[in-house]
Image 1 (cartoon, rainbow, N blue to C red):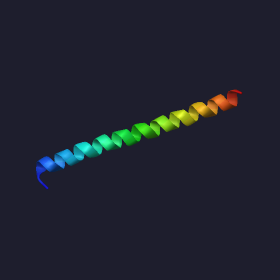
Image 2: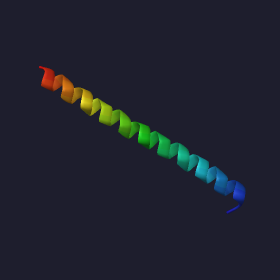
Image 3: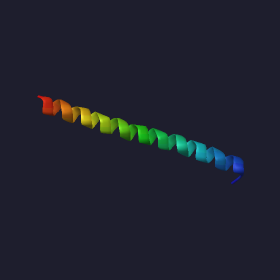
Image 4: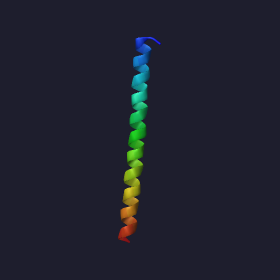
Length: 41
């Protein structure tokens, strides 16, 4: 693998990791909000 290909691979991997992390954060906030709403009722 050339250095250019390796850099592109790492860039794409970083982007995927960011998307997965943001998705997990979204679900954590969503579950927290649902829990607070159910406790409030």
